[in-house]
Image (cartoon, rainbow, N blue to C red):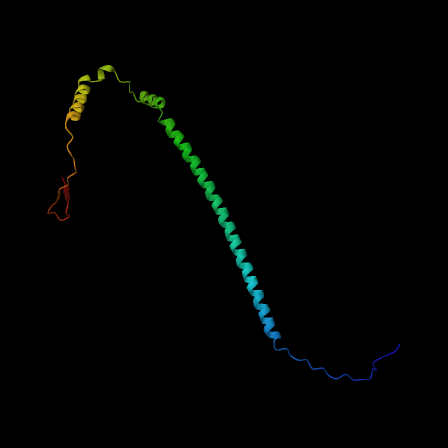
Length: 146
């Protein structure tokens, strides 16, 4: 084997040169990495917050639907309780009886009908609401409207 470099030859010492821009490049790279990391963390936080709001919205929708169903059920119960057949049964339990023809006063009905006819025959007078306000001399200033 042939040696091209003699083993006894001394190499000169190599002095490393410092690159003045290397530190700024590393700082810029670190800053960009931090900005990206903070951006990803912020986006992840927003994502999980939106998921949480979505779950809460779904719970609220379910609660609203169950409340609407409960309202429909209660309305149906109210309608059933106010049905004429059920009211009649409840009235009979209380001891009420259907109205007898003798209980109806034909004279009273005739008088009410004639009063209505008389009021229709009168000429219509322009009825503008007139408001007279009187303030009493009381300490709380009561107002009377006539």
